[in-house]
Amino acid sequence: MKVEQYSSRTLFDALGRIGGERPAERLEALREAVPGRIVFTTSFGLEDQALAHLIFKGRLDIEVVTLDTGRLFPSTYKLWADTEERYGVRIRSYHPDQAALATQIADAGINGFYHSKEARLGCCQVRKVEPLGHALKGASAWVTGLRADQSDQRGRVELAGWDEERGLIKVSPLFDWSREEVVRFTEAARVPVNPLHAQGFLSIGCEPCTRAVKPGEPERAGRWWWETDAARECGLHVAADGRLVRRKKAA
Ligand code: SF4
Image (cartoon, rainbow, N blue to C red; front, side, top):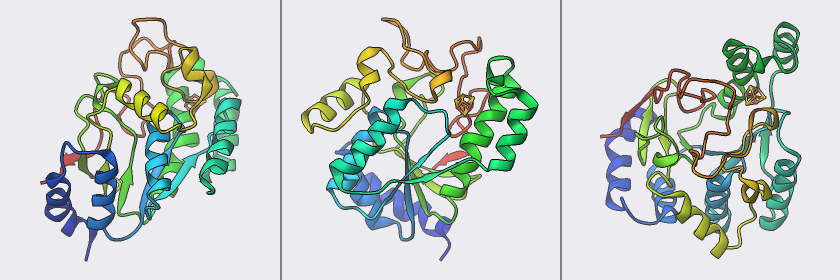
């Protein structure tokens, strides 16, 4: 049976019955409802650490993988190692294609992303979007740490939807949580988190493209801060023009 045949009704019925309940139950329901490979992509941010905790503690058959762009903060690599040690696991990493990366750097420069939006999106494409495609190859479902109140662009994030382009179910178990709820959860469960969060780095991506936010700024204001348009995303979840990409509500 194709994933799409059962994704629409069966999955949404299963998730719908526990809608509004705990993320752990949502993950368990997802695993029960959807056969095949389920992949959770973590960037070791606050939300991702909460979900990784639930998956590892619950011993759920969900692959936890990461996209190593090669430009992450040293503290992110340390958190990666700390997380593996804490839960006794290995987190598989996906990397940019070396030839494509060499071409991109030769064309745009090692820090070319500061000079044009085109170069920035080209870098994200090689370092993030293409490795994501490899990570999700053959997967039935993709689990993400998205929350609807992270930004205006993410405001329409739902618990579950169908990713048209990738041909899989996309699930965001924390879609209706606030940042404060995630903080309370990680603190109560003693989940390891990136120390940069305490220094104002509310959303953490690649080192050269992330700065701390000032009090009162939106939590994703520190990502690609030099770009002037409001829609600043890397193309994994939201298109460069701010559209939430390739999803329709499972129904
Ligand atoms: Fe490149 Fe910056 Fe995108 Fe990372 S966030 S892939 S360094 S442009």
